[in-house]
Image (tube, rainbow, N blue to C red):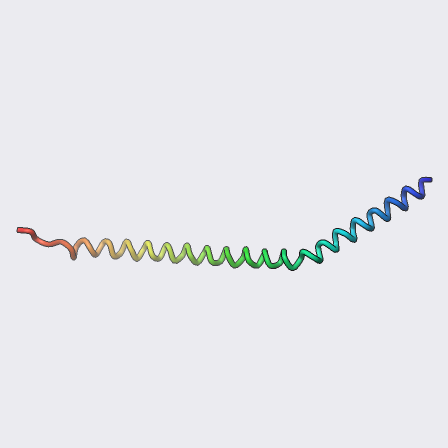
Length: 75
């Protein structure tokens, strides 16, 4: 009687391992795609933040110069 339970347990474990590895093989390309997509989005975000910092710096430099040139005497 005990050997039937052990054999059943081993067969069940084998089926479980087969199902999990099969699912992994099916979804692995999707996982790799999502990982690559996250990496690309992270890089794009970093570039956008750098561009925003550069634009803010450029705007500060130009706003400091503009008020001087816009001053006019109203006398």
